[in-house]
Length: 87
Image (spheres, rainbow, N blue to C red):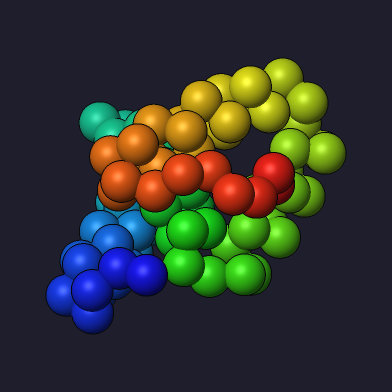
């Protein structure tokens, strides 16, 4: 179980990427979808709704599945967690 400060940092980072993704949908210089996916991968470590949404995206867009799995593994290694669930 991460410390409360680490959990807060994870949540803030995830929402920051979500905000960048939303801005990127309207601004031509930012990659909106990429930032949204990064934010969702980060938030999926803390929120069940984010895990479910990523599962839906994986089923709907199978070509993104390997990219999402790689991003999830990378996020887990950065956060110092072992991948315990298959999303």
